[in-house]
Image (cartoon, rainbow, N blue to C red; front, side):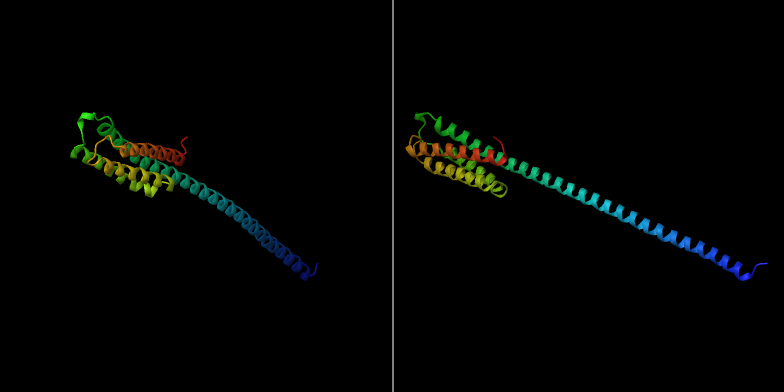
Length: 186
């Protein structure tokens, strides 16, 4: 028969080997799982970062578009007010028959009201428009008010009135050019 210590040693080595293999396998598996988890986490972080950047770019595009649309609305409102004033002015002043004489107080009041509407629509333009367009709009409003002062109580055939009208045409053209440039319209 064999000595018992040999059997015990072989049994102990078998159990120790099995436990060692189990522990080694568990450690190897845990390390592999940690590596896989880190890679997934990094991939998720890259994906979230990319999505955040995409979302941020989309918001910036939407903000630029919204700003452009608001500017366009403000510019359009001001230009419509100026066009309304110009139409009324040409009807009352330029197309006026010579026999009609001076402008009535109602005609002057109407032109002043239309100029005030243009001045009022200039306020949001100063806030949202480019400095160049805001300056041009202020110049147009100043000329409109100067024109009303020039025709107030005077005959329509005065020379300053014609010069003011020509200055108004020039300033309005400059305003349109700057507005088109600011909106990217050629």
